[in-house]
Image 1 (tube, helix red, strand yellow):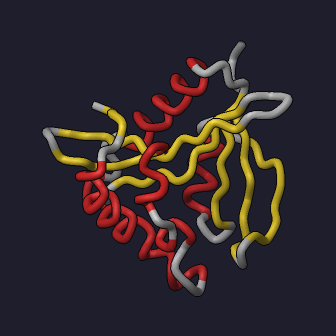
Image 2: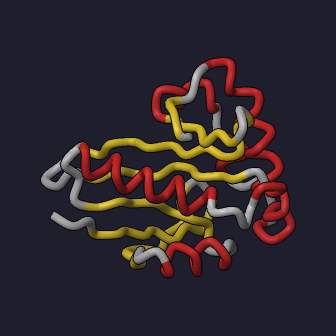
Length: 149
């Protein structure tokens, strides 16, 4: 089940963030951006995925207004002990359905260039690279997925 995050979920969200992104510290040379973010300030945009009353992952979804409406995925993380069970795919499908319900025409996200596994997964899910640039000292790859109209 995927539901809106609540304040009492924050401790578990932080634990998942630390566990999911810690392996990338050596590759990037410092903690990835999701490990540095203040999830408390992002609570209104967070959704959690529960399995048997345990939070096993979360996703941040932020509507982007402009000439075209988009939904930004920032971030998405699955408890490493639960990876490989389709949780990430379920959250991505939820993000797409949520975007369509808002009238968005695309999903957007970015990933650190060093996270090659994530980039490959997003490509498999239909995301296309739109830009590469350094932001806040992170080498980021920006991706988009067009949604059906």
